[in-house]
Image (cartoon, rainbow, N blue to C red):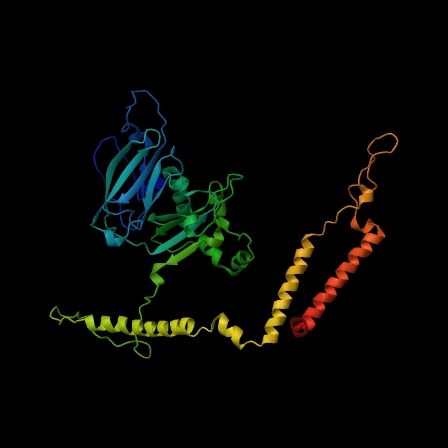
Length: 419
């Protein structure tokens, strides 16, 4: 790394836990990238059994970070740890609102093998920057990097060195780093060593160079709209290590930003200013809600009771009964109904006795000479349709007579009764 790059990189705050078992104080500047590495090696000595000198242990360790007294970290501070076997990293860009206010971060380490825990505090004292914010800011999208890879001091220093060679500023700071997943990007497929991508915002004190302005010309804008890579002359200075998506570069000139504050013109839809809210005094008179309670319950209950009584009278006191129904029904209709019921019952009884006794001629007999038992004339699967003709005609005659009697009884019940 060149001396110029080293000098530029010193503006980014990096801290690592020391071996001293006490609270750690760091002093980042507002508007400058803050990176704090949580080393697993430091916390390995906190968990029993304590390793001996020269002994190597590789227990899985994870970290939990939160603002003291709160369940989460401040909004500007992020945390990442890919696996329990890698170091954790706290990073973010402190805001000017927290200048002069110590921010205490509780760091809890968990040993996933022994389930032991260790806790330390990180005290962040945010300092005010002399030239905060820098007037010219550029945000780059690097496609071949993950956020934890970009947070490494060597990688970030190389990127700032490449930007300084293209931009040529006197002051160059890394303002913020954001993972593409935090901007709505998709998780890449685990093939061909694909990366998530990372957004890196840098600030400088001089206007943008002509190389950075090339992405704004109409030809490159057209190529970006067609999802083609624009032609940037200084891309080769980054291509050796960083693949930049020039269509996603963002150039912000703070000197040309106009205040967006507009005076509110009151009109339709805007209520007049009513002043401060004045709550009611404590000397309010107590109100008796007993009468309201009775009215609320009594009226619906009375209506429900009246409806219940009316329904009970209709269902219980207005029933005619079977005897009254039979008295109002004509005799001829009752006789017809009774005759139909009797006939139906007889037909059902006859349908249950459909098995017919076998004729005597089909029963087994003895041979007159040998004395052996002779087989029946018909097999077991003998059907009634194969019965002798005389017996079939006799049964059919009985059935016809029964049906004639039934029909006559139904059609002429009064005559039969008199007879």
